[in-house]
Amino acid sequence: MAKFIVACVFLAVALFGLIHGDLILGTINTGDRILYSQVTAAPGIPGALVSRYVNYTGIYNITAIRAYDRTFNRTGQAHVVGGGLYQRFVSIALQTRFIGNPLDFLVEIYGR
Image (cartoon, rainbow, N blue to C red):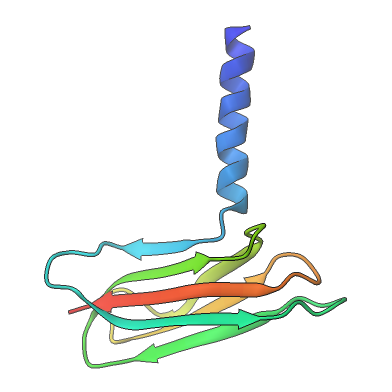
């Protein structure tokens, strides 16, 4: 019985990791400042996936990137497609995983 409970807990944690749509890269340290903070949202389109791109270019090196999925069922996904940590630019692709779902992300970029 104990093995069954452990297996169920392990499965639940693994499934939570699959549906968790947040992108968290790097660490926010003392001296870092917020370089970019923006909500990117789009309504769901029947029969289609919704996607948006967030592009940031600045004069400071990026130390942390956060993209929080704010939809109720957390069905979005975020990926860095260009630039990134320790560079001065980043391009982030935001997309829904299921057809017809809306998109709602809070994107924050930190650096120094």
